Amino acid sequence: MTYLEILRSAVYALMERDETYLYIGEDVRSGQKGISDGFFSKFGAQRVIDTPISESGFCGMAVGLAVNGFRPIVEFNFSGLMFVCLDQIFNQAFKFKFMTGNKRNVPIIYLMPTGTKGGLAGHHSDNTYATLSHLGVISLMPACKEQIPSVMDYACSANAPVAIFLPVEEFRSDTVYDIADINPFFLRLKCGDDVAIICTGTSISTVNKFFNTASKSIVRRTALYCVSDLNLSIKCLDEIRHLKEKTIVIVDDATEDFGFASQIELEIRRSKQHECPEIYTVCRLSNLVPFREGLEHALRPSAERINEVFLDSGLLGGKA
Image 1 (cartoon, rainbow, N blue to C red):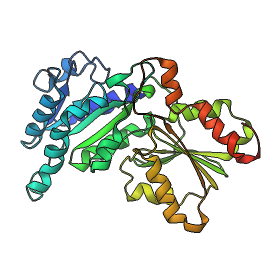
Image 2 (image 1 turned 90 degrees about the vertical axis):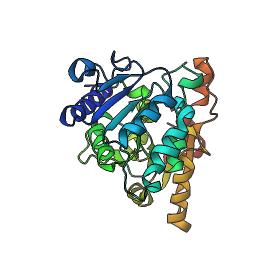
Image 3 (image 1 turned 180 degrees about the horizontal axis):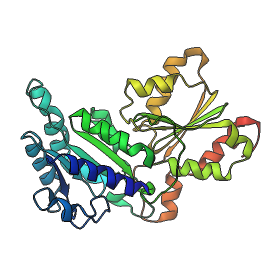
């Protein structure tokens, strides 16, 4: 099964077991994105709600439903469209519990496809997770299909507004990872001794492309870790602070100064003090993604740019 099929199954299971879950968004009855395919015929018009093209409108509706006992699941077409409804997500949904003295929960799950498949540009190529995670809204990104059920379970148990960012490049992926312990915060996808690559779901395909072209020595000696807790809460940071590798390469399809790369580097330097490993970052060069796919590729993290880090720094004592 693909990433998208596992996601659809996980959301379907929520809808099936609890009638308070409602599915809201643009063209969700027709399953345009593939997440809600078949939901309308199963759950009907009262629970699968098509909306106008108005993110501020249907996010406001979700807040009203949540404070009245329902559990809305809100599907966005692209995460960049959140900017028109930050008031509804942050000022209203996120703050409501605190403004009522913890007397009223607002359990909303926002499903936000993020990143780009190439050449989409404009409003459809952003990776906006840092906007919500820096504000404190629970922000998660399942890196691979095996992790989706545990991330969804955590989102439900949080009983609060949760943004689940979904890397669009992974939607059709059927890559299988042999993971013994599915951690909803921090995954080790590959073992190594000398170098650790840390990435998110929007850069995991890029890192895998690098491994496919790298030398056997580099592949054998490089570990791969994937962050799914975009808030970098204490459970995630504990794992990061205890990494043993001598060199760390952070790959993130977001800008270096407004993403998780700079925060991870800061936390590692704080925890290691005088024994800090060498740290390198491979991030977006700009938030402005051009329409031409070739120019877009030059701005985003790529296997070639990761390879340049290994070459320029002399990591592992040889060329990739």
